[in-house]
Image 1: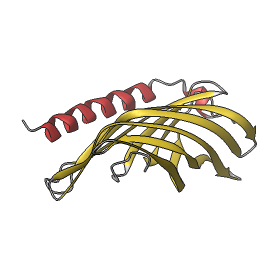
Image 2: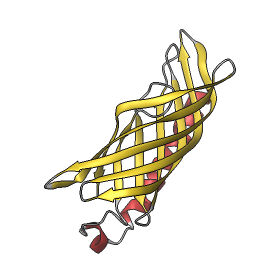
Image 3: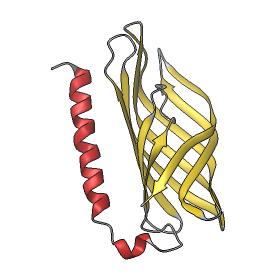
Image 4: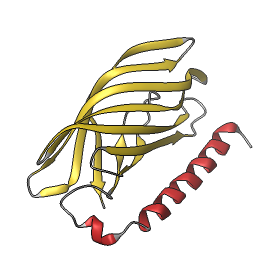
Length: 171
């Protein structure tokens, strides 16, 4: 079995476990105004391999949430994949806006023309904001800015920032 297929199989198992864990959440908490206890399912472009990632975010307390990001592309020429764990801490909160600091640690790989451009650890330290529209609080949009360290030919530190980094649907 090639490494890309092994990674995709691990990724499928992890995503299945996350979905099963999300089904076990207390449903009465899911209808509360606060996002505490909510599972956010969304998409993110935070991994350094330029492949959109599934993101599962769980708001554990009013101050802390964590997310798991995973992506996979099995193309021989432009393939890659990634898996990361992210921790967010709320700094300031308003009715439809939350400012937070976050830390991400994971693995990212990206091929171009059959050669790996990115392959190794990715570490991000960012500040961001998540907002929702009035009357539509079950959908959140976020953006972040900060620093990213990623293994290319050598370790590269660069600024990280995207206008629309992620979109979540909260269950």
